[in-house]
Image (cartoon, rainbow, N blue to C red; front, side):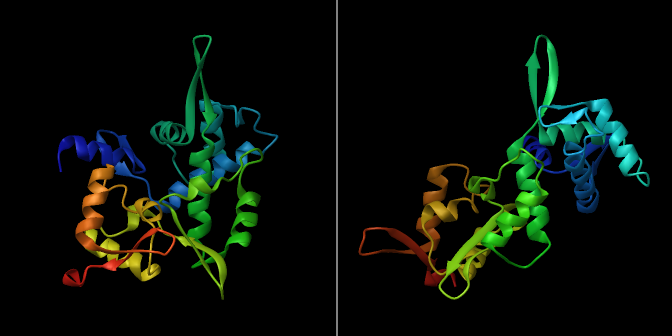
Length: 231
């Protein structure tokens, strides 16, 4: 892995640089930080932390108040704002607006990791209850984060399936995906291969070399498993 690739990978991870060392935030600590941020957004006693403006000093004080057992360095506060806020410049000053997609995706992750599978309607209803007031869920926020399935017996269900947790070996990843669903449309499969196939050409090459394909009577192309030579 090149230095540029390493830097890009680190940018996607919950990491900070503290005293010259790169440190990874634990999943538990990450979840606690997000929970405090979201709770403050709906707290009338935290007027300095709202969707349209998250105050750095206000957030520092809130984290210290709600996480008394943790020493939260400013590097962590900066990371939290960088990850879940957009910088908006107005009249030569910067304000931090909550990024709806980022907040939605982290709360989706928290919810789905708490159970093996949800009925889709139950998931939507529960998610809306734990999102900050004013933040709305959109199905596009599930991309590369969840697996949605619909069967005659079980109905529409959803489970956690984060592309970052999938096998790095392409064959093993495809094998896992075909174990979840026997046939895939390319557009549905693409979200779980985005890190391996950054371009459409890379995706086409991988699928052509590794997958068996069929065409339905309606002319729709489906991927129906790994080629036998790879099994």
